[in-house]
Image (cartoon, rainbow, N blue to C red; front, top):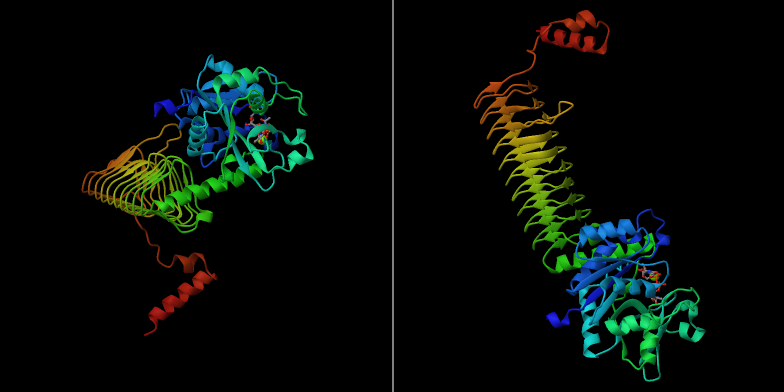
Length: 479
Ligand code: UD1
Ligand code: MG
């Protein structure tokens, strides 16, 4: 396969993206949990090119910094002040030095273009031994795009931009996607000959096709019928539209692989989410980067998970998780918040209105109601009573709490860290535990109950409480 590898892919990312009206560079806006340029680089990488070049100019440092993070192998090329796709590609070539073979050009703002389509373009280019092959599409409304010009025999003779086109040329509905495969030598030669004598005074990459044709080289076009793949993002309406289509495609892939998605319209998954067969996603579920769900697990409704792993058969209901690990058979929710470092052991339970952070909860252990468990280790089979607080923060430092296996922490206990509850120990409801509790002991740390008989009648005379108390005492006196 190595002979099929292109010498380089040049990804254009120097444009300004004005219509986004954003402080963030356009190509850094994400869909499916990945930046637009990230999508372009993923498709480019799938060709295994010898070189990958990203051409930058506007907000250059932000774009270059991001590219360095997600694709450190990529070469950053700076476009000079000459505007246009032609000078952008020339900058990319300059950064490469001498290059031989096939050079592919793509845009950083065309996120649905797949590696398969690029591979098809390169394969067609090689099969035809073409000098240039352009990816085109037949669209209903070609407004704004460059039009593909053909001779009487149907051969491609060039591309004309909308604003430079005659009315007759504007009627052409085959558009230039802006994605091409070039012979490197021809490309650099032709780029040296293009001018900016056009309506925008820009150096048009598209002029390379006319030059190649005039020189007698083979210029070819391959059309895609999947218009989404050549659609670019220019504004936030297109960002949302393409984001929705990407999501739809990802969900179709998951459903074909055996995932039940009850309501695709309200379910969102990022590109790198992994779902096993027989996962069920209920409406309102959002799964973000780094989330992996094992077979038989059910997520949702109304659940958001980022960077979480969920084991076989586990259930997460109406909850929010970030960096949590939920093991097989465990249950979470409704209405809980799992923060980074949460590990819920097999068959464990985090119930309703529970927040956890950096908490390892053992196999079969339960934290069922209204609890904060931060910086905790909870042993297997332990039960944490309702409204227990792991008081982990002394205002300066965080401290750890350990609860032993099969311990029973009473309702409304405050565990003041650092503190250890031994295996099998109990704490009484309403206790504030500040000292370690030995294994098997009961700790009671609360005021003893004191009864002041008749206090309401004496001190709250005339109130509804006093009348109720009076009635109760008369009822008990009546024989
Ligand atoms: C370009 C094509 C047009 C095609 C359309 C497809 C040219 C002259 N025209 O038009 O035929 O139908 O794309 O979307 O090529 N860029 C740079 N540096 C620049 C200018 C642009 O890197 O100086 C990058 C942009 O960031 C963008 C891409 O090139 O990713 C296309 O630029 P854009 O200005 O959108 O080109 P169009 O005028 O739409
Ligand atoms: Mg454009």
